Each structure stands twice: as C-alpha cells, then as structure tokens.
Image (cartoon, rainbow, N blue to C red; front, top):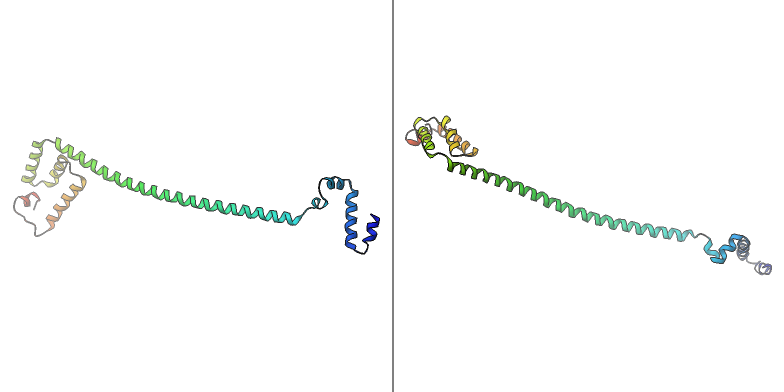
Amino acid sequence: RDSDRNNNSADPSTTLKSTATDTEASTPSAHHNSSSFPAHAARPNHIEDEVKSMLLYQHLQNSHSDELKRLAMRIDELEALLRDSEAMVRLHALQEKVLKKEIRETERSKNREGSNMDHLKNVIVKYMETGEHEVLLPVIAHLLQFSPEEVRHIEDSRKQAKASPAAPSSGLWGRVWGN
C-alpha cells in the first residue's frame, strides 16, 4: 500500500480515497461491514432516501386524492337517495291525507244509510215550516252526516242569500233560506 500511495501522490483525491479505505479496513466494524456489504453501501445515501420519501409522499397523496373522489361520489349517491326518500315521504303523506278523507266520507255515507228516515223527514218538514235554521241545521247535518266543509258551505250560502238584495223573498226556497 505504501507503494500505491507513492504512485498516486501526484493526485490528492486518490490519496484521500486510499487513506479512507485504509481507515475503514482497520476498524473492526468496517471489516464486518465490508465482508457482507460493499463500502459504498455502508454510507447513507441521503438523495436516494429523499427520492424514496418523495415518491412515497406522492403515492400517498394520489391515494388520498382517489379516496376523496370516491367518498365525494358516495356522498352524491347518498344525497340523491335522500332526495328520493324525502319525495316518497311527501307522496305518502299526500296519499294518507286523501285516503283519510275518503274514509271519513265513506263512514258518513254508511251512517247516513242507517239513520231513521222518518226522523229525518220530520226534521226537514219542521226546518221548512218554521225557518229555525240555526237550531235545525246542526240536527240535519248530523242525520245526513255532513262534512264540516259542507256545513260551512251551507252557512256561507245562507249569509250571502240574506245579504243579497236580489234574492227571492217568497216561495218555498225563499222561506227555507230565511229570506
């Protein structure tokens, strides 16, 4: 080795390399490392580590971006399902309202069939003869199972008939409506 040093004395970088190799070879750990790994592998390579780190970061960032896109699509799907469900709830509520109204009308119609026709006839005759509309309208409404809307409509019509100067004041219907 001394001869190598003397031959390479003109080139200082060669001298440094050989000195470093001599130092590494003289340490016990260097002997152990040099037997299983080359000398350049024992030195840490910061550039390779940084490149690996950057590649790993880029991979994680791409994975994260893909996951965010997938989750955003899932959110859109769930929001669409929610809108559809809310529309179905509104539709069912409307159907329920209509069906309840039909059930009430059917019940009134059924009750009407069972009412005593003689009693109904007597109340109607008294209603027409006496003009006691305020007293007899609720009785007739009950016997014929009028809906609340029908009772309001009759009462509103009576009020309009009383207020209208062109309404007929004679005849059967004029007496029935109280004119």
